[in-house]
Length: 46
Image 1: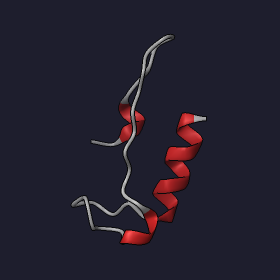
Image 2: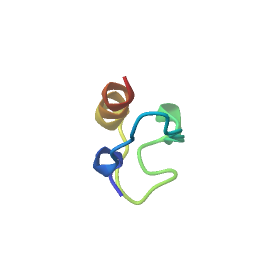
Image 3: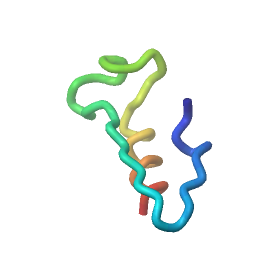
């Protein structure tokens, strides 16, 4: 599931545990999670 589909509300606690960037794009997931995805996640949570 793409993280951008969630819609946290005020006072919600959301925990993200993305793959470590250095461990490779497909180490923990079937879909690529590369530098571009790391940046998307960062921008989403900020």
